[in-house]
Length: 335
Image 1: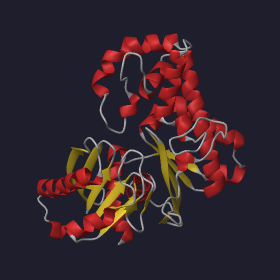
Image 2: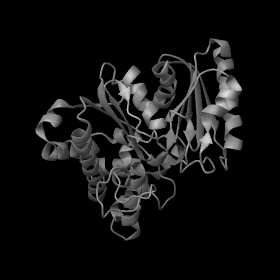
Image 3: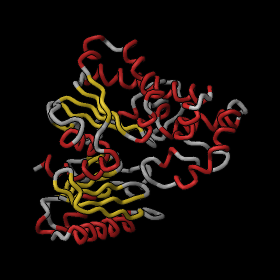
């Protein structure tokens, strides 16, 4: 099958057999990423991936596309993703079906990643699992009774937009106090830079300036892009995490608060879905113990005993390929 991971900055495409990538193509989404500009580049990426794999379209069982939500996986219509302006009510599945005339499947990228982990990663064998990705934002997907939870409009499992603090900051989604506003890489960076601008994080700023050259090449639009220093006066989540490990108190406090908010989110997930497995992925989750230990502590302190003891928390296994494998897994899942 072919898997396409459509993002705001990159189009990643692969020919896959199961979780094995037979070829890989990365193209920039480009400036002004309207459908008229991006769709031809997506078509180009498919042709190039087939060529690299030395496989013809007739050998392909289908194309799976993981795209930013909100979207409806049943109809293949993308509603209005914040990082893809101009895609309002765009019929993505139909556009591909007209071009390639093979089965096309479209799903929210976080849902697709959840499906990938369920079929080929840490969730194999689990019929009740929740996948949470903590990266630039916070997303997720839910598998219940072996099926992907979609909801009536395909918008189910927007886990990053559960309310953690109803008096919290305004989120890009329009809500206030979302989990994404506290635990994402963007949120960690925002809090750090706000404290720096107020003169309350001089030690963190000094650490960032002293260690910036080592990260100068890390400013890429990949999944971990929010974890790099971008300007001398702007630090990101990776630098905050490294400063925390180096013993900078304000950095430790920022990471701890992000972890505690994540813990509140996990408590909500336990109480609502009662999963047997929670899989944590995304670049920010790689911070490890400074983030996850507070999250686990909050779970132990606040969650009801039975659902808490019934769930196991594990790290995702598919790494940076989760978007491609997840997109490709849509073909297996629907056929």
